[in-house]
Image 1: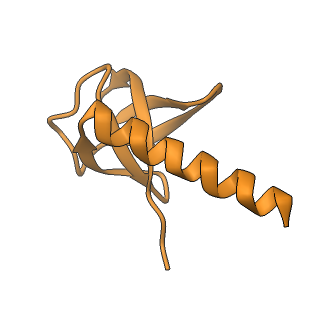
Image 2: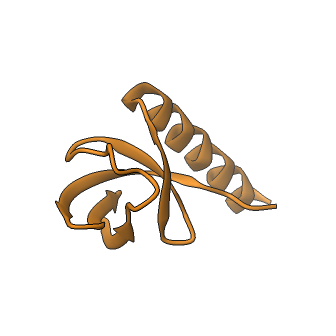
Length: 75
């Protein structure tokens, strides 16, 4: 199973962007999402932005991922 995670785009240069999740920033490829703008959330999979998503969906997905991670720490 593969997982894509929501990240927020903080800058764009050509076909790459800098994206942030939490306090972690990394360069990502945006060739599959040419419509992306600074401030947008994208689903990131293996270094590629594969879809632009709305902020509410991104925040809910991140909240659920944090909840899953906290449950795995308990067991």
